[in-house]
Amino acid sequence: MHQTFSAHSSVNPTSSFDDLNDLNSPSRRKHYLIASDFDQTLSFNDTGVELSEMLGLSDFESKVSGLANSHLVQQGGELTYLLLHDPDYRQVRRDHLWEAGKRIRLKKNLAPLMELLQQGIDGHRFTFYVVSASPEEVVRSALEGIVPPERILGTRLNYHPETGEITSVSKLTAGYGKVTVMDELQEQLGIPWDRIVYVGDGSSDVHVMLHVNRCDGYTIAVSENKHLAPIARRTVLSDNAFSVLIPMLEDVIGWTDRAKVRELFDKHGLDVQGWEKTQVDRMAIVPAKLESQGLQREYC
Image (cartoon, rainbow, N blue to C red):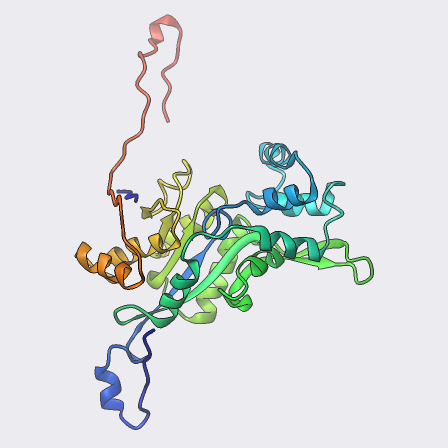
């Protein structure tokens, strides 16, 4: 079923009994990992489109479409390929990527969301990472002051020490690359898979969502992408970053009272409007093609 849509704690080291009975103490709070895509998940923009517009290049989408149709690169890795091999994009330097990041429009209330996750909710604490196929420079620039740079894992590029030209890729976090990153984070943080949440929006998130689901994690789609929405445990549609909290509060933390969810949002100056939960079956119904007429019946 797909559905659309400052606190401070301290620990007294001399009192272990009090610590065990305090749900807000670090030793008692359940620890979750939240990993999120960046482009059109935390932002409204596509990094490649923004960079191309900044450089005065108009055919980015057609080039990406051609690469996708050729299956030459992993989904989400098209921009990286162009940066390495396309003459128009070979001009890009580190400064261009940083500037492009500053141009990207982020979803509303992203900074307050990060603050809330840092504080924790109802006996749960969260570690937030961004896992993106976009160059790390772009994402770190866009999220400067909101997400610590060490919590942003994107595609890492190597540069010529004299010319600044992009020479190679040291790590590509696209397609199966995101699966590898999630495995590394899980092992590094020691968080069980059933306490891992992944949020994404597009086809480049399919592999990692399937992986997280298979490992008993929780997945959230923030778009109606035809490849992603059927895979995600929940789909939430909104221009506000706080929206991803709703499926987490209900399915991960276990809040069943909508009033409690609305109260939390209200404490942060937000009012949930147009909250519709739907189960949608999409199909096309057409006249049957009769085999007797020499036509074959089509199936999904």
